[in-house]
Length: 359
Image 1 (cartoon, rainbow, N blue to C red):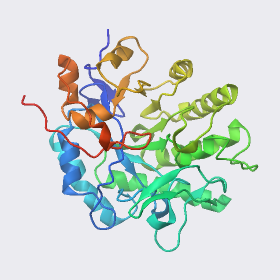
Image 2: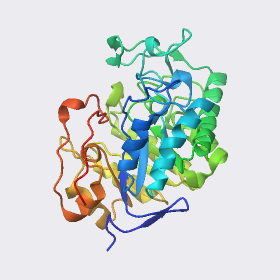
Image 3: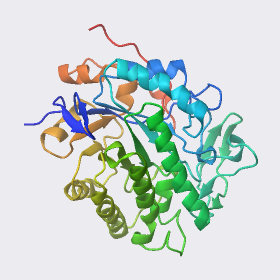
């Protein structure tokens, strides 16, 4: 029987276990030019016992930034800053992928330079607010991306992926979840286009597929993963038609499967039957962040590896509170409890670190 503590090969890398650290936005890129810092290097190095670390969301372009103090991978300065993070994790024996996150319509002009405004597949504003240095601000109507701008955005992802490898990352994860740009193209309420980038399921999955293909061609499919969150309503996403939801994500998985990616990472919604269908359809490594709301993913989810529901499990909030989480999972605890007062939004962003227990 396979367990979460058995090794696994991922994209040519030998992982010590099947416990992944889920991506969690931190807003700690206080360095010059939205660069990584020594604090970030220490934070990730503390958690290097994870089989795989997936970083916080990293914007692939200037206009891809949707939150204050989030890091980028679109400048030489940022590449150099990330090197201290990857070196620190590798010294501790860890494997680390950078999550490329273009937030699309989720953001605010005050977070962007030079008069830029957020962009999206359609000029449809998300309902809700985003935190800025000036306090919460309503989401604005995004600029609808023209065809040539979509092509440029795809190239931005590929360029950022090359930068990630130059910065020492072992690979990248494309953020196609939580209502950000790739997810916006997938969702019918955010994507109201009638050209080849929208319409039916085949049109709406095109952007995700083209971004993934471009990144895989740039750095190798074995270094490329993608995260999706079918049916989850984060950031005003509405995927409420069950038949369209299944058609969209089965079409997406069918189009991605021949690329031979490092993994598919599913942030599970309420429909576990769809998770099972995607697991069955996906030919490669299947990483699952299971639906456990209101509790964080914890020890009780380890059986999902044993029963074959997933090849790896991603843990979020519990990894913030327990930097040595694989050891604690293996021994059944004890666990530090996440400080829930430090979380906001739907994707477990947190700001509190806890020291590891003595070995």
